[in-house]
Image (tube, rainbow, N blue to C red):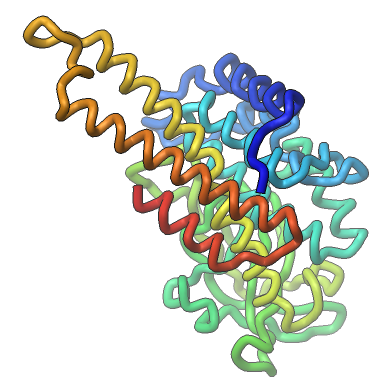
Length: 328
């Protein structure tokens, strides 16, 4: 594993940082207070190329490799203080765009990927239900076969990008099947008949990332909007989670680095008893621990990204990445 970066990769990261610092932090305090999603900021990121970072050029992306994408998203986290915006973008890239890219038909890729890369469509991933979160096998949303498609009935909750999504990847069970064998993914568009979308849920943090609920009451989804084969939903879900649980935290690495630098600068400037407070052991120890956590987190995430770049599933490594970074 070689985690040294080429000059081109360093330039890409620097460009993302400069873009984020210049374009994405204006009016953030007010947006945070209101819990407001900004399509303008979302579109700026798309125009810069963020949403298309790993998507092939034929579908409107820039087709970066996984490690380069991780480095660029790290730069976004460093330069952009709007963690909600970053979280929403990451959720779309890793848990909506990649499943469509990896499991979708050519028609599905052509319809959704260019629009999402261009910031014209927002995507959401909907697995969680009132009684089924981590217990994915316990989901109750039913998909009954109908002429030319499926009729969906059920509810999804705590869906990132839900209130603003133009298309949602929704997982349900084929009514005649049971357990994992029946779980299937469907691409459901906003405005579909009997597809209700709630207003945003008020949250304590990342307030600019909208979160909401879906209710489907005899919602018809045409067969061409099924993602993958019947019963392939669990494989699609596990694949997307191995990406999301690791790469979504690339931006957190950048935010950690920015916060550490701010702490170091403050410890150098702030004086007490005639000395900068950074000279006091109680302060310097904490800064050293912050640096250790940052570099450890970075290595764990890079290793997982490297494994993904080798075409390996790496579910354990992805889970460890999430556990370590979110626990810090």
